Length: 351
Ligand code: IPM
Ligand code: MN
Image 1 (tube, helix red, strand yellow):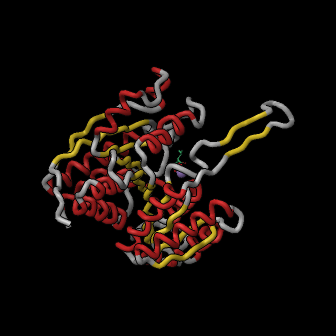
Image 2 (cartoon, protein in one colour):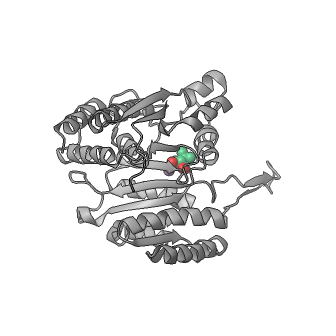
């Protein structure tokens, strides 16, 4: 489609904590390099959100910051979290809140084996593992439903409820089916319908409906079997659609099989484009290596690539993907600085 392609984008940059600033700085530099080459510009707007800001001010995501983020064309996020903040505070208050407020109902997590990357299963060919996990990103067990009663007694009862709405499941499966149609035409629903029958039946019915509408071939795997097959026979998967928690877990497995979390990108998408989408590496803030110069920026660079694709710059996105592959094929650099240099060299070499 020959739509209008903008020549300049306002991107909110939320470097966050730990290695977040280090890896997104490299991603920014790479984006600027491909933008110059491809004839567009990115106006970066930095936002100080995350553990440091929270500890200094008590603010997690102030309304004013959220209002500004809503105006951006996209958000590039590094990582949030610190050992000084209790687990859950920033995850729920920042990451999950952004996913809900901006209606980022798809979490796109490609897993691709690249040449030069040591993988956990040595018998794998590159073509065996090139898949995309489409993770529902606003519902399921992440919706926050549940509670605790009789706290502190022997009868303390904690519940977590998985919310699955017809509309929510449908819009996610629809995105996945369209993606499958643009790739191999194969879509796999991953769930646990043999136990989680209520949600499972909804997912299965909706997936069958949507697959028929989009003309894609639908298969099904229980999540436990999907883990086994991802290791044993990943070629059977192309596009996987699954609920929020299963997608969270499967995408870490996908990352482990393709070189580790350092390489894994993600896009939290609002496919309806009623607001910006948020792109972040799958890895966290890695406080143990923060500041050592050893963080791998590839996950952040590939996330920036997903961002450029979403913004309508597929050639620039492909440039970043190709550069990461080229650097890996030549032997992965050990430091963030070497990564940056190698990526820029590869981008300048042009392919
Ligand atoms: C991820 C992370 C988050 C999630 C956490 C930090 C809330 O693990 O993006 O995969 O569970 O979605
Ligand atoms: Mn995760």
